[in-house]
Structure formats: structure tokens, C-alpha cells
Length: 299
Image 1 (cartoon, one colour):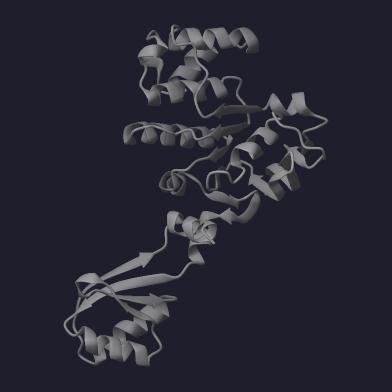
Image 2 (image 1 turned 180 degrees about the vertical axis):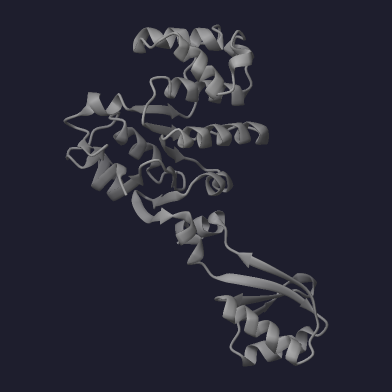
């Protein structure tokens, strides 16, 4: 699989304080990659290093297979970014903001209409940005980031401060961009959104990579549970513990039982039914990305 971003043993310090510690990052082409970590983990510093806003003393940052130190202009021409809040002119309309940007990139004027339609602001093209909702401003910011048709889009907290409708708008936009062949690298605190949007994640703490890979692979490694209600929980606990199941009693007489796989689940059901324990309700439970993130970063 082709890699768009690759860092090898990347280190960075502010004075004597080490912020990034031997960070090895690999972002596959045409993926939506979620970059996660608690406050102070080094996410923003990493992004600034990738964009050349901070400088590593070594040649260990590669984008599109090329060393960033020696190919900065060529590389950054293929990169668009939005770092937290978009830089837009509030007294200009959406069209005028892009027209001003086009003085730099010198694209065909049809590119303005194309971008406004991609980001869903064509109907609001003549509305001044100061009257935009937060979600509309974020969409315009992303439109400005992709105006020059970059292959890689780097976004730091793109849904920060958005209401649910705004979050949905940005998610749909990013999925469309991925379908257009772009690679998207996102830093975000909204883990539920990352789980819906991203296929790959990297989780860091104090500048150290704790996990990197596919979300499905991460979740599949976690312990799974079922919750059941029976007509005789005392009998159910006795039977299941004899079969080496780990059983916990939760509130409202619900039993939580660890199951490793389908065979373990089927055996559990068989044990209860064979011994005439009636099952009133059953529900599968598995850890989500937020549970895993807290478990990884709290140690």
C-alpha cells in the first residue's frame, strides 16, 4: 500500500521539553486517517512539523515519498490544510473569498463555482462570511484548503465547536473528498466522529505512538461482553462460573459476561437452556473507540 505521510523516529523538543519521541507515522494513500491523543500529546506539533511550520533537525519526514527538508515547495504544493479556525475575510462573500485566493493560485474562474458546489455553499455564494454559521465557515475554510486541488488535506480539529448538523455536513464533505481520491489526515477530540469517518488511526501520548493501524483491527482485539437477564440469576452465575466464564452483576439484575468468540457465546446459551434457565433479554457489548482511547491513554 502506498504511503503518503511517513515519519521515521521523529523527535522534537521545545528547549529541554521533549514533545515528540521517536514518532513513526504512516498514512496510507486515499485513507481518512484519525490522529488522536489527549491534550499535550504532541498532535499539533506533529502537524506543524508535517507542514514545515516547525523544523526537524533530521531528514525523517517524507510526504509523497520525498524528503520534506529538501523538497518543501514541491511537497506543500500538493498539500492543503485547515488548522482549527479558518482564515477568511468576514466582510467578503464566499465567492469573493475564493476569488481573492485565486489571485495566488491563478486557476480558471470556473474553479470558484466548482469549489462552492463541492462544499455545499453555491446557494450562499453571495452571502458575506460574517453572516455564516460556524459550520458554513468551516466548510468555506476546507474549500480554501482544497482550492488548488491538493492530494493531501491536513485538518486540525475541523469539527471543533460545531453542532450535530455542522458535524454531519463536514463528515459528508470529507467522505466526498476521499471518493475524489484525496488523502485526509485529521486531528480531533471527537472520538465518536473519528470512529464513523476514519478507517485508520494513530494514537499518541506524550509524543509516543501507542497504536497505529486500522480501527477495525484495534476494536477486534478488545474484550467483548454480553449482557443478559434471566429468571434465575443466582443459578445462571453458578452454572457459568463452573464453565470458567467471567460474570459480573450489574444494576437491574443484569449479568455481564465476557465472551471471546462465537463458540464461547453459543456454549453460554446452550449451558443456560440445557439447565432450564430462561433468558429474558440479551445484548452484545463491545468497546468503542472512546473506551479503547481512554484505556490506552490513562495508563
